[in-house]
Picture 1 (spheres, rainbow, N blue to C red):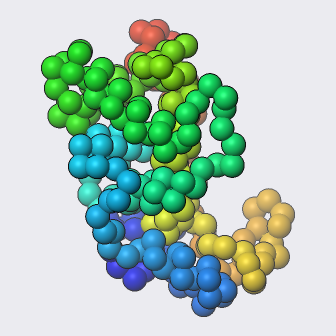
Picture 2 (cartoon, rainbow, N blue to C red; picture 1 turned 120 degrees about the horizontal axis):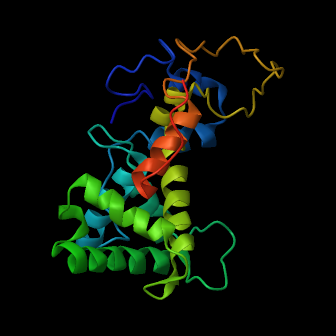
Length: 227
């Protein structure tokens, strides 16, 4: 994938910024961990071949990674589940995370076959999003598991994997671990000497417009867009 954290595709939200240029300020263990995230991913060891296809389609929709190059989210989730590294807690109405992932991927394929006579990964992205949203909105049991906890499980793992990668750090201007150097500019609006100003800090789509668009897409109604 490359030795730098520079996000492929020429994104210039923080022009010239590459978080890996700060690696010399990190301790050896931290630097090694972060550098491994940029290595070319190997084969999966937790998900089988069928589960991998479904997991990749699911994570692409959850994170809107609709084209290559992608942050290797599924690889990170696979490794975490193989090691049985959960979040340190489990709801009493949920199976262990590693079991919940396998069961929920199979359930997603079951829903897809029942509704569209195809596996989830073979559907159009918009149809995939609809099936995922069915789980998100469902109250109560879904294939023997609480639907909304399953959706939260997917999002928790996907977001944690995405935002642990240097490409994502560059996208948000995050200069990496503070240890051992630390930060001095703590007041709002201040930047460290190694941080880069955002090229255009304006929100391209105001929050209220995103909320209204989501309401209309999922419920068929919403407030008028705010300008």
